[in-house]
Image (tube, rainbow, N blue to C red; front, side):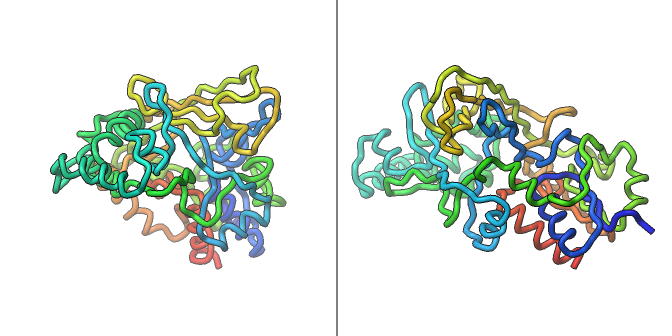
Length: 367
């Protein structure tokens, strides 16, 4: 008999939610993670009393009340509202694009004036069938917004000229003709009080876990000691890269503690000028309205992924989509393996969608 009913590889949101549901259903569950701590990319490190989002800003938002109630059953979420600011050559603009942004750009004060300015620039561009991301963006919001707030940031994020990126990456751009700086339109939004570790600890309470444990170092042992595997790592690695490696973008962080109470006055400031090497600066204490005497900031640098780096964003272009589909066909034939999460499904996921998917996969694969 197998020692475990369910082996979960990876302790991020997908793995932790699945583990919680499986354990509640009476299954004997083990969660392993190759990192020295639990939580995947939502892991927080406490520095000077500040919960530092070690792998970048994670802001929970959803319109799914079931998911909102689920996460709040483990830890209360605060009222944090994501209102990022863009810095372009020293000038500040509110995001997403809204009346505050348009006033800073053009001095317009009414929605009609802003709409006319954008429509005029779109007409002048004369783009009817966008062939790349640059043309797609200009056709949606005009040249000023594209040049100041999209071009430099996007090229740093993807490491490619906007003319070389496919148009479908920007299917739409949020344009808001109100003075509303709330980035998300969801009904619920916030940060766990005390950080995301509180959520992961709640999900995994009473469940056996092993950190610093790499599934691939002894795959045969782990497979022989479980009835069901839930895999949240890279799908191409699971299949020994037999068709080739999927591509990712990674993020490098430069984090420092500063001897001041408030560095930038906002949790998230994007740097949209291409001459600035980092994409944004995160000041972590603002996620929880901290008043500590010091502050911690992280500069984020986007780069091509290579072995040894953390894979962050899948490059969902045509070439990688074709490659992923080959692995997906293999995954569909697995009877005792469930693939879930950003890396296993090779797609970008908001946190609430990861939780939704984990709940669905549990019902479909275990119940």
